Image (cartoon, rainbow, N blue to C red; front, side):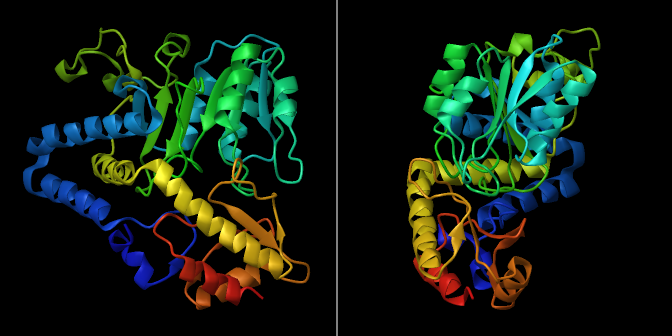
Length: 367
């Protein structure tokens, strides 16, 4: 796996919660598609269409669903907005979410309060984590829970099976922003009762920017009206029909031409991760994060959330009194170590190709 990442010759790269470096084979697949477009123009279209179909199949395999339940969009925000704007809301409906979530999973839901008379019921972080009992209480009488599988700063990861049980019992729709977890940790959307999920490809999925996976459960699909419609939304669009019905599957949410190079790249990366196995990937990431968390704590650093295997992710954020996070991140970069500065915390996010030697070097460099 490590041989697929030329970035290791330049950096100890721990920034996968921001933008991941591309694997070799992903970059090669994108170059091949661009070359095809350069040399053949429209006559390569059938090959590009098959790349998109292959991406749907690979994403479905990773999520435990059918390819007919996968749409290809531009980013996480587009999928979350498709749900927020597609549900037939009633005044007084309640959405459960987290105000301190990444804005992509807050802004669309909060806007419903202003436009549709929906109420937003906010969860609160407790020492960087979220509590299942708090979620259970919040979902009582709620229409939808909009949750991030992994919190972008603290690294807290929901137990999706437990979350799904709560939402089923409360009669509450479950919608996930999975961008900080898909590709790194297992997600079984059917077993966990997820109704919709959105994840950009450029983080833990190791793909390019501009391509995303959007899952919609086939039983939930009739309840979700596409908020964007175009020629490709309709069955028979290849015949340039304007009077057809919507596609019977999730491709109804793909309103126009897709990013062919992006699809080729993301398909390759998802297949690479499927080949390794997400369960294997998660074990590798856990080991690296736990190693850093232990050594940083020994140097007096505070963690944004207590580290537990059951709720830990690939993200750990650190800070220490008297240490400037921005200056520290810049100093680490001078030593060719890539981490992020987020809200005064030093955020560390390794993937499965990183090594313990790289983690130990980072720990040694921490002031």
